[in-house]
Each structure stands twice: as C-alpha cells, then as structure tokens.
Length: 451
Image 1 (cartoon, one colour):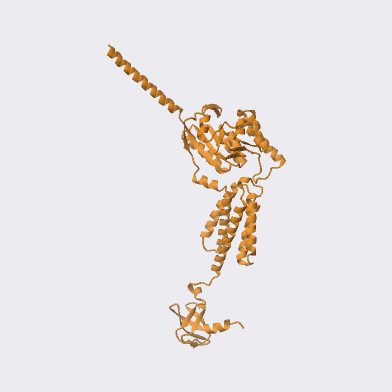
Image 2: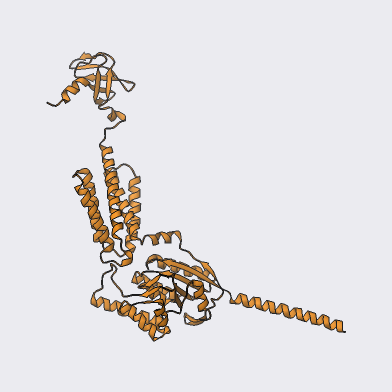
C-alpha cells in the first residue's frame, strides 16, 4: 500500500514540475517581443520619408511589436516633416525615437519628429530644438507669413506634446517661437522626452512597462527582452542620401557640364555626351533636394563659358583665372547664400573643386581642339603634305609633267606643273581620284623661304 502511494506521489510531483516548466516557458515567450530598428543620419528630406515609410511597412508585415528609430538630424523640409508626423501618428505599432549617439542632435524638424513618436529618449551630450521655420533657401520668412507658419507649427507641437504636461508644451512652443534648443537633461526635466540612455538597449530597458497611446488605444511597452531586427537603407536610398551632400553635388555638376561642353566642341562620339547627361541629371536631382540659391548656377555656367573662351581665344591665362574665380563664387552663392548651415559648402572645398575642375576642363578641351586641328595621318587627306620619291623622269604632257612616285612603299601615278627628274623628292599637294599632284621639294622650300 505504501509502495503504491509512493508511486502515485512520484507521478503527481513529475506532472507538477512539468506543468510549472511549461508555464514558465510560455511566460518567457510571451514576454519576449520583436523590435524593428531604423537608423538615419542626415537631413529631413524626401529620402527620410521614403525610408521611414518602407521601414514601418516592413515592421508591420514582419510582425514586429514596435519600431525603434535611431536618429541624428540637423533638420530639413517643413512639408516632409509634416508628412512624416502623419506617418508616425497613423502607425499601427508604437514608435520609439532615440536621439543618438553622443553628440547627435534633433534640431529643427528633428524636434518635431521626436515629439511625434510615442516614446522618446536621448543619449547624453545630445541637443534638441531650434525649430523656428525659415524659407526653403534658408532666409527669414516675412512677418505675416512667419506668424502664420509659426502658429501652425505651434498648434501641431501642442497636439503632440499635451500628453506630456504643460512644461513639455511650453518648451515645444519655445522651440518654434524662439528657436530654443535644450540639452538632453533639460528636455527630460521638462518631460519632453522619457529617458536618457547611453545606448538603444538601455533605453528599451528603461521604457519597459511604460503605457503609450497608439491610435487611441493604450498599450504597455514590453521592451525588456526585445529581439532587434535592423531594417537598413537600400542602395538607392543611400545614393539619394549622399546626394544631399553639397560637395558631391558640386562635383557631379562640374563633371556633367564639362562632358557636355566637350561633346559639343568635338562631336562624333557618344561617351562624353552620355556621361555628361547622366552626371548632370543626377546632380540636378541633388540640387532639387537642397535649398539652394539658383543665381549660383548662372555664375557656374558663366565660368565654363569663360574657360572655353580661354582655349579658343588665348589670353595668357586671364580668362582661365577669371573663370576659376567665377566658378568659386558660383559654388558659394549656390550653397552658401542664405541657405541652412547643414547644406553649406566650405570655402576650402569650393576652392579645391573649382581649381581642379578648371584645370581639367582647360586641359581636356585644349587637347580636343588640337586633335581636331591636327593634320590627318591616314586616308587620302593624310597623304597631303607627305614626301615621296620620283621613280622616273616625268614626261611632258602639254602644260603638265606625268610620271610615277613611290610613297610609303606604294606606287602612285603623279603629275606636276614643273619638270621632275628620277630620284627627286616631291611633296603631295593634292589628291585627284587615284592620282596625286606633286611639287618638287626643293622648289617648295625655295618658295617658302622668307623674303
């Protein structure tokens, strides 16, 4: 009886242990969550919207529980910012914004996007704010238009931050009205962000258990044991992001214009024209993304005209120097005349690009023009001016003398207006079908001597 009792007790203990292990495994699986990670370092332009839109779609399709965006941005376009805000607020899953790493910023439009996220954190030594609107070329907006844009953005920021309390709302309005920027600690003290973390993993640990509102529903963030899946930029998105670099755009435009001018000055090929159209098209696309002063483009075109004139009308380098200086001025006006700081071209970079472009352009165009003017070396045109040897004494035929000559191993029927003796050197002066007209070299030399 005791043995049977012990047997049943052992089975019961085993079942209890199995049930407890099964329950713990299920709890662990339930607590584990998936996070899609997007990382962007650059201005708020069209490529950011494309990347975030694709990333959110991929995250939802892959069953991610929330999205973590690691961002470092100097700001950007107001319209693109509004479109991304709408994208964030319509998201089916929570969006967590992390401004990092150390030294990063969420300036201007970046502050608005941070406020639009469902939760946000910053790395130490980061900055956020300075979100006053400006024109697309970087200049100040007129008084009436400024007030309209400012009031519109303040209303949007109030709607995004009212859940964070009155201090966060006041700070958000000051970012728009007064272009105020604050440190990570100041943003946390005002409630504008939720945490300060040295890494994305630390931020997720701090946000675990926090309640957020997504599409009107309360959700509890389960971020303590989140499994991260990166969604990187595609090749095309990386290329488009690179085209927000003014130095790269300047180089592409310079190469494109050079290639097209070379093709026009020396037609017949297609390589230079193809490269010119391709690079110029890509460069113009980059310019279309950047807030630029288009007067600079006029100066750049004028610079290439001056450089081309230097080759065709030698001026001992005067036009080349003028064209180079004009090119430097054009680059600086294009990118630095009232434009935002983050799209400006440094003066050393502008000088280096202009001097390199001018030197290469003058060299290539000079080479092409000289090649075009050079005496042909092949075909019938290449024979004019060549020197051959008379194989016989030319016979008189009316006013002409006819015979044969040897030229480069070939025998040609020849005619001359003067007597030609066997062995005389003669120069080809004209091609007439399969015959050549020649003049004695000695006679030609006499005629060419200065008087």
